[in-house]
Image (cartoon, rainbow, N blue to C red; front, side):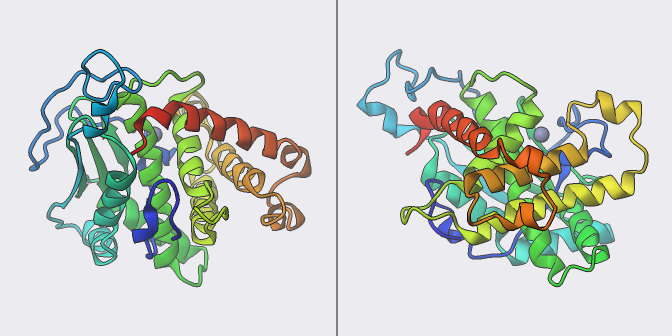
Length: 300
Ligand SMILES: [Zn+2]
């Protein structure tokens, strides 16, 4: 991928899927009894905007936030977990994603990024542990979805969906670590952050085509979930996440809105209805402006 503000140049890879976005799961929050083998970060008061060292005022020393994101891969035993672990680890996925964060965001504490066998396809930010977990089963499920869909390169698409999933979780992380104000449902806001990260132009002023594809693949995964989940029930309607197809259309809208000319195919091929498409440029600009403003004090 090209260099964006998030310095994800290291991601010359194919990527992922997951948890916090899968409507088949009743909860995307961290299980209370989750255990991790990584060192727990020291607790820290979230600073005010710009006041990174929490000395009461934003100043030049605030560039010295001490935290880093640290990737680890735990053991895997089930076939699904082994599949997902190998997919992620062989691509150095978590290491590269962590490096991208460390090059771009100030962190008040060390943040473990944990690949692990969870017993279900999921991904989550833990506000209590200040850690992010990407379950191996999440990548394995993505691989199955794209394989069943006849994808020409299901592994690349699965990696892409996990990249987008990671940035969705990064949205939860940022909201929590920086105590960002949000309106609207946090799950939708986290999807917006994923789109914002992946669709922000690089230094050359262009949006990275590989990142656009990652958002498109993420959207396609939600279509797969929708197809496999059957009739929409009350549980899905009441869920903290928007319906799978709503999330799919949102992501497609933001891809189109970020570059209506470059991504005109989304409308011409019928994927994104014209009625929705008409407002997408404005919709994307608003979410991009909002995230730029919210994260401004925390960029390195
Ligand atoms: Zn989420």
